Image (cartoon, rainbow over all chains, first blue to last red; front, side):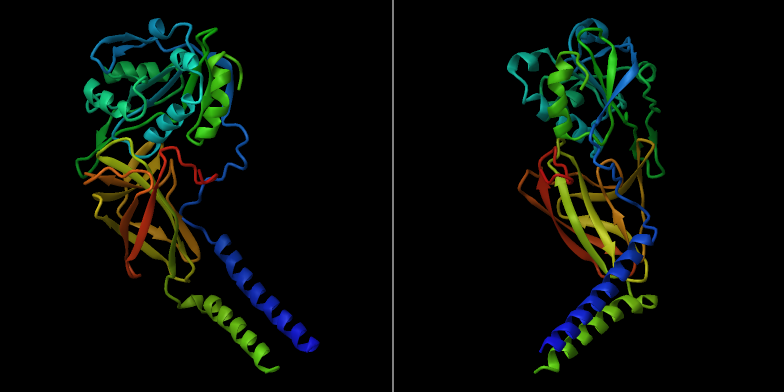
Length: 217
Length: 149
């Protein structure tokens, strides 16, 4: 009986080895796409050595009113993201992550925080379209639209490169979103922390209380 | 009885070998996992993510996706720009991954707005393999597949 057990174990081991050999060949194959594995990604935030000046943007908000970014966010902790509403993937996720994290703050802190969504697709993102979309995320978010060239120039000053929307071969509009969220300090009004697309809601939950005070996360 | 047990195990081992060694001429062997849809913000548009694994020795291609929720197109993201793709390879012994910020399924002209807790049914069509039906759960708008919440 013992002999059999050993044999069985050996066979099991053999079968396991066979299977694992098979599995490893799958690993060494070259899948077209690989999940980006940011090992641990212990910190989502990048604190800049040389902070950005706040973009000098005067645009139109979701009520159709003029919005002077520098003037209206002066001395307030501010998060800015460049994206567009016809974006199913990263734009709503990024905005939802921030909005959900914001709800964990005290009411006073929530009222201090400015979350600004600047469209990269102003032709489709009218004040009304932006307003409708942002209402589904957080009505306190400021949505800005305006002349593309102005938006592009403003984005460039904070290291975000966007191209104007173009049509693909099927006539569908293809827009670009920024790849980073920039946090501006209430103390200096400078953009001092960046978040990439891999930042998740927990990162913002952890960091927002610090960003509110202009501290490094 | 004594002899049967190891025999059965031999057989198991042999089957494992066949499943693996036969990969030269084996068909694509597809399975889908990690499917989810973040609850959309827009009432016309949503994204979906999943992983298609191919344990077979032959590659296959994802050619289209259909759903009763709306029109589905498949996109890759290159330099912060979404690009529609008509064919996505599912390599032999490899996988095709759709994940936030990368490849994604785009649902448009939604017939209803999916809510967290709903399930969206979709069908993946391939060049070689039979269509695969996927029940895609709708998660929160901030769902992180790495932490599962």
